[in-house]
Image (cartoon, helix red, strand yellow):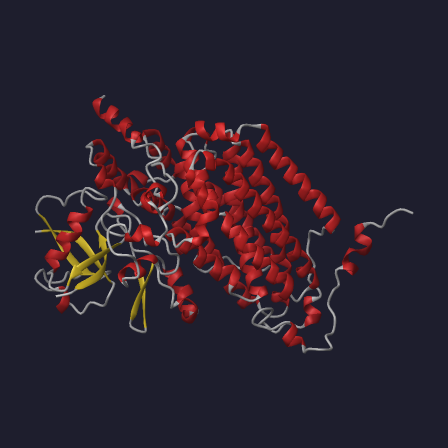
Length: 87
Length: 497
């Protein structure tokens, strides 16, 4: 387990943020860290019933929710999109 | 015996080329410092500057300008003006005087290099006056900022800024080192005099001067006007250079220099002038929006100059530049407010009800985009959650501009990073143009670390204050909301009503 820097593009935000996570974090945990840091600061809470998903920046397919950062083949400072998907 | 007219002797007197006997031409004018385009000396001798001034006339005119600017300064109580000035105007002055003087000072050496290494005698002649101009610009702007030190320590940054690694300063240094200080005299002159000075200084110095006058800041207005009158003269170095480049088959090279430097300098002016015009300048006294000023000074005047030379608008004009005029500075302003502690000035939000109405009128759709972020910030303040107005996460910075990697917020969310992987390192860019510039000369840019890269690499002191310590910012120097959050109260009253 080690810290891993990602570049986070959170839905609705005006710009990207540095998000330092842990290689053992799942995509759900990554999304949750971003949500806790940004909701109420630059964006509103997710709409009711929506789930936050993570994808590589610019890709349309979300990564599996239980995929760990260490297993995602990310490079250091990989950019990810975090966005709402209705469940 | 009547004296000669200047036109009788001027052109002859400035013919200072000679055939060197003791060293080869290439040692006297090394191509990498002088002219790497291989244009013959006989062609450079044709450099003909449109505005010619003798040293005697120069000294007299500059003295008149200084007397005019400094006398306005002494005629009114500058400190009293500042104390009673609108917080937005204070923010504008704090930002200007921290961000600009050291760039002017850098230009002194840039012009001095053109004086030494320019191949055309007329170019060397004009550049020597340009060197003196930039000395004056540095001095007058440091002096005018200095007088406010008794009432506001933010103006210490007029002198302090270049001695720090503050993120704004790092961004400016990267831009102006690239454009002015690390290229041959010909390239630097085209980039500095044509793209930078002819393209953009009117935004900060003419448009702002008009705003200053309307805000009753006659001293600042006069100062800006005298600076810009020099720019109008020495920026003319660019056009004769371009004519020589074009007539010697170097059109593509000239176009590339303009394409690179126009974008680089645009990003700086968008963040500086754009935020000042559209957010800091008090609403009642604004003349135009950034978009309107850009349309007049850049899209009309500058493009006219380009076309007159037979050059084209930069390749990215329609797809990237024009949209950027309507978006980039809005995003940068949000960041400058949220991360205000990382700046030496006290930003105002500039998004009260009337201001938002103006922004929506000037930039249709603003409330659905950037306004959505300001809604969240406003609610945090009204709820007493001031800690929520300072993000816990660092912003990501573009590896070219050093500014926030930003885009469109809210309902039309659209933020794109463009990346390059080089030697095991990922570089991120806020636009396809910034990426294009990097890919033209990776060796030039690849070793630079943005402030965020330095944080990730562990190059900053540990602890919550580490970033500030790295940037040379003691607690009392860090920016605060210029209106102590009172701007948000108007929305509480609206809700109550």
